[in-house]
Length: 401
Ligand SMILES: Cc1ncc(COP(=O)(O)O)c(C=O)c1O
Image (cartoon, rainbow, N blue to C red):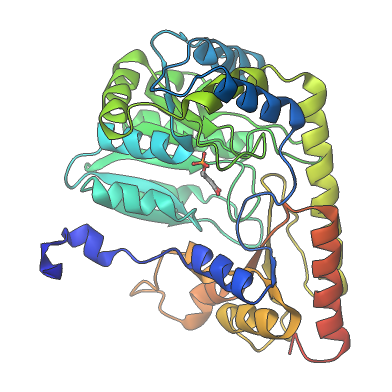
């Protein structure tokens, strides 16, 4: 009967990151693999959720007011005027907002440009919609965008470009110059842009997040997706949104209603409280994560990693294995679990470009087997324990060979 599965479904496999998390649980290892916090969510928003349940907001519901708050935040952060009545769709996390967006705009055979390395779910949604992902690799160590590579990726079939900034897995924040290049290309080729801005509030070193939609002439062709998940440490609440010109937002809304009807009602209620959080909340989120980033980067440098690129946003460090390390990324991750009891993610899972015919030397893309992603959205205790274990491994002379 398995032949009855759709051809895309047949190609899908369980997420390697989730498998690593199961492994972490089974071996009681410290989980620096998955991108969710292990510390409590803010009390003021948890109380709002509890109170919503107790007030019986437990049925299908489209909570009025969230869109006003999302629109206000867009104005405050990006100076964009967004109509809360027509331009915003509340979904089940950025994940559903992204999927509904792709289903709304991608037709069979449409090409969608993605930057490599890339967060893993975009490709699946594009393929489920019948589209074709086209990867443009970012150049290490700073994950720079190369204009020529971008230009070469456009064809008459290109429908959209997907931009994730701040970026998972690298921690890159696309610069204004790079955003202008992408915006220019979108206009030249008359294509749409879909952005994933879930780390919009997590930027470091005075870097601030610029939405591609805020560049001249871009709002009318950009669909912004984001969520509460990372900003409020509530990845399990599944509240996110798409912000788009009314004609696209309406298509996304129709798809959202058919797929999930509405996001979880009590958490939509709590979103009202979350999105009203004072500036001090967002400042301390950034400050806390910057300290965690510095702690993890220092620790990795002490054990021999050469951190040429320090993340500017998100909560991941994408660390290149030291030149002296003869292990591949996958072997290193296995050793890290077995010997140190710490789980991280092998970088190869985030890369999609393969060796091209004209540049087939292993060295050309050998870097794709040399990165490890560590998530630092963890409590101080977890990070300190992980640091002790990783350092111990190196001091014993067991690792990093
Ligand atoms: C880049 C990126 N986008 C989206 C998500 C998922 O967001 P949500 O929980 O809102 O679906 C993640 C989660 O790890 C992520 O890293």
